[in-house]
Length: 331
Image (cartoon, rainbow, N blue to C red; front, side):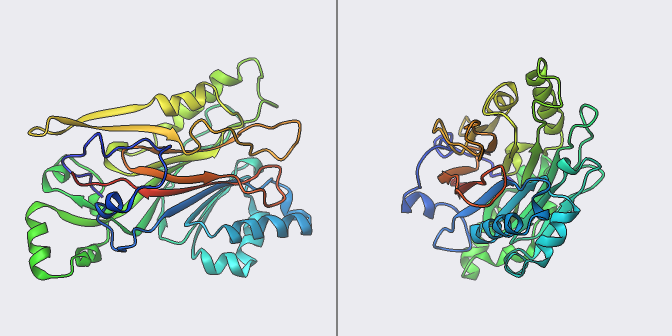
C-alpha cells in the first residue's frame, strides 16, 4: 500500500470530527460507492472469565453482537481461544482469527477480523520491556474495499505496496477510465496496520515509577510500526490508565514530510483519541470510573464518525468501539 504523492493538510481532518458529508466521502477511491464505515473494537475479556458459564456467554455475545470489522482482545488465553472458536456466531462473522499467547496468561491477545490478517512472529512481536510485562503486537489487516491511489514515485521511496491484492486493479468501470488513472497511479487494496498493546496495571508493578515505565513500554513497542505516513495506522488496547506519559507519547508523535514539491504542502501524521476530550468509562468497577481502554487513529488517514463504550459483556472492562471513515486521499 502506498500513500499518494500529495496529501492536503485540509484533508487530514481532526479525528474527533463528526461524520463526513457525502461530497467528501465521494473523494475517497473506494470500491463501494456507499462509502462504507470501518469499525474496530478493543476489549479486555478478563483472564479467568471463561471459567464461569454466565460470564463467558455474556462476553462472547458482546463480541459477536458488536459486528465490528475488527475486534482486538486482551487477556485472551488458551481457555478463551477454545470458547471463542466454539461460538458459532463469532466463527461465522470472523473467518480470520489469530491468537497470541504469552507465558503470563494476562499477556495473551487475539485479533478477530472479517478480512485477512497477517503478522510476522519474528518481526511483529516485541519483547517484554520489563520482566513480567506484556509484549506489543503489530498486525496487518487487508481491507478489500478500501482503495487508495498509489503513485510510482511514492513506490520508489520504499513501502509495503508489494503486499497488496492485484485484483484491486479492477476498481475502474471502463477501460478508458482505467487507462487514464494508470497514467497517474496504480490502485491497491489497503493493508492497514494495528499496534495492539496491553500495559501493566499499577500492581504488581512499581507504583512509584509506573508512569515512566509505561511510557518506555509504549516507546519500545512503537518501533514495531512500519512508517505511519505510508500506511493507515491504528494504535489501541488496554493502557491501564486514563492518561499520562504513555498516552501523550502517542498523541505527541508527529511525522511530517514534503507531500509534493510543486504543491509545497506537507503530509502530517498525528494521532488522536477517537473519543477526543469526551469523558467515558471502560472500567466496570464503580470505584474505578476511568478510561483505561484506548483507540488512537492517525488523522492523516482516518476521520471518526463516532466512538462509544457499550455497557455489554461481563468482563471487568467494557469494550471500546470506534466507527471510522477513510480520509480523502486525493486533492
